Length: 157
Image (tube, rainbow, N blue to C red; front, side, top):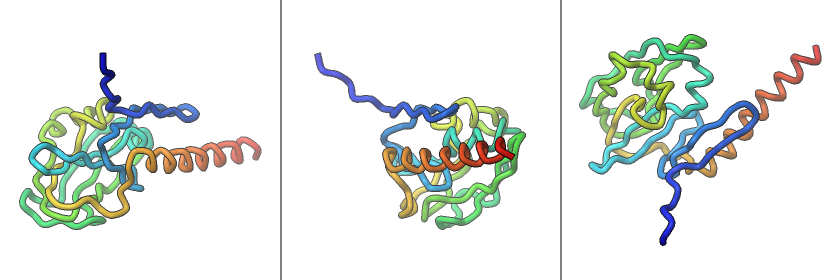
């Protein structure tokens, strides 16, 4: 009997854990891009990013479907209980549109950030700084270690 290869990498560090899809690219800003069967990219934010923003309450978009987009361009915003954040494009190409589910179920971003909670779709090329899952894990380790160091320093005051 052949084993089915895993589709996710289980990640845990301190009080944070996530199931990271293996076939996804990750940006240093904690967004992800997954190629779809039609060649387009679905883009969302990682579970780590949702944890930093808190429970989602609203989102908005600054570009229309069909618009040309570039990596680093602000295409929208997300509001969570903890923070508001711009949504930056991580694909050079064409904006195909936002996830329609988010109009009525914005909390899907928190509940299923790497699945039904995707933010927008675009065609084109992902930014060159995108990482595979293993490089993203190294970035997460460094980021979480910095947070823990800050917490320990504040406890010592």
